[in-house]
Length: 378
Image 1: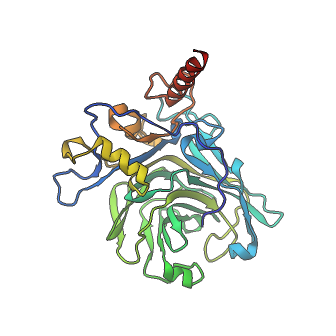
Image 2: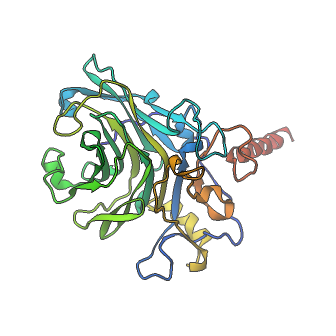
Image 3: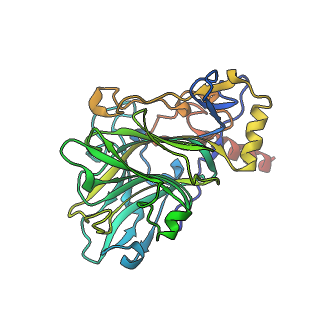
């Protein structure tokens, strides 16, 4: 359920200039373009939260949410209080490191906190929504490490409205000594009729995992096409849904919360606890006509040689796997020819990390200001 978004308009909503012979002018593909089941998407949105240190995450394309829900509205013994300070960046201290110490201690990444103090009848929680709201069909991937405190719900989802929603939800109460689960959910008109409860519909699956989701970062992913939503973990296919699929464009959300409902979140936890995001990568088609025009301009005739294959993540992207264990590929870090005409948000605030016009679109802004200032002076 999407509520009022809080945050300034991001300063970094700048498209990389179109370059000649760009490698990805015609889009990004699942599988090779020669494969019968390949799919090509026109747009992307990527975030490397292991190296993002910001006071305002809206600069990275996300708006923290702030709102209250009463216990009656949240359908639990506690209300929910979503608060902006509970969305917190915590990057690695070293700008080029993929393991090691973080700025604020603990796991590096973007933290969504659930607080342990609920003495006023509300559980202080975290939620953020993407600035972009035009994603329809695509491949959506996130590196996540879940809360180690029992009694919270952590979720990564795509949202259009209450009857068109794709969720991957984690209940920390379901983690035991050796394994956990992920709840795969489509919110549909049927779930709305059942008081927003999808658990008794065919679009709900409790998927067992051969590991505890709170011990390491893993990649959770869903691929959405007109006839199918397929769910993956670390590149391995787990389940698919083919009925009551969404048909409209929407945005991405993360949240981490508790309301004490014994049938769902349980809890609330007695101590502060975080869900940590290491990255988010989305490759999708846009419902925005302006984005269609941009794509048509750089790819007037489809050419498979100008489509870039999306790399597969086939192991847990966790720092414990070695110095480069958490390292993953980002088109947005591989040069301007890999993101022609794309909207690129801020990736880092480390001083000196941006060394080119591509790496720091803020330089484009400075050049534009200088240019127009010169015109005024003349």
